[in-house]
Image (tube, rainbow, N blue to C red):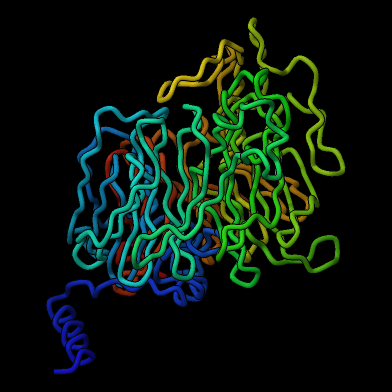
Length: 537
């Protein structure tokens, strides 16, 4: 029997047994993800990171009929932050700390599970978490807390290769979903609180061989090193702990970079500290820097730029432009030309008290007495930012940018900063502003102007992202444990479901048996929802 005939026979047997067909994540398919809304093939739904789906079965008229259809429990006390992938009847998730499971998309039944033992002496700042996977061909890829990139057979969970990216004993960790581009797997690192030197890597998807590395803190002789005083670059942090975006026409990868180290004491690292708190645009084939834009030069408030860069093609001030837009942790919304990095627009989208505004280059005009001090200096936003790692969404249907917003203040204290490998290297501390209750919103912004079109108030600051759909809906999450749906045009609340546990994740949507599902990690379970049978669609 020929190889092709064998493959067809396998597909027929799986269909007969009602088992999922092995998932396919070809590069060409990911390129066409916008026209394949039945599946969710990459962390942000497509390379442009719109986190928008063309599925439209669920609408404002029938969303009240959404019901949970299955639930998959994880057996770990850490925060469950995964964004699932959905392909060909399978749902792939990461479980904390660095495990992977493949589930039947119809029932939630586990097909296989990969479990990884994590060393006891690992150094982490913010919980043993993992935010998701990448898929390419018939392989899924996971980064692990102990700094490995692992390739798993999508059909069986068998390890195809396992490579070490960094030394966890020095403070590096890995928590982000990788990004599959062409024949490469792009992955970043965490550990910015431990004085590591950040980088972004690309690996050959078939062999695991490293193809390129871009250091986000330049060494002597490299452009940007002059923005670090003395040898402070060696412990400059600037980590890359959230997934980026990709423009196949320009062949550019866009990736956010984290805070400089030490976090709250900048006296030893005089200068702008490139490429911390920046968006970098790299050639996908070589890793060479094409341009950068720094949102917060010489950051001392832990305002990483690890937010999702969203790629939008539309007219800006009457001229067609290739744009990249983002709601930054420093509470400003930015519009940049994604070909050149030119600053086009900046506007406050969340409460801030640290800057008078932005100058014509987009550089913040800092106000006096807002830097951390031994006595403490209070500012908005808090160290958690106007938003954080959770995903925004852009809807081409409404031309609105949806972002989950945190409004809270922090008092920042500057303290001593002594570097020791593997030890916290933050140079200070922080606390909340007494008597001021933090709050949160889902806000809809006009892409071209950054003006607020509408907002939906939340009881507390959110820790999860948003999803928009062609059904005219925006799905969001509340820290109290609710998944909810809003009218995408007006923000009117239409439906909510109490999930029974705090939500630290982004929702997705996919088709199973011809029905649109919405899935989100809530508490310690992945829950998948669909319309009840008696609801008219």
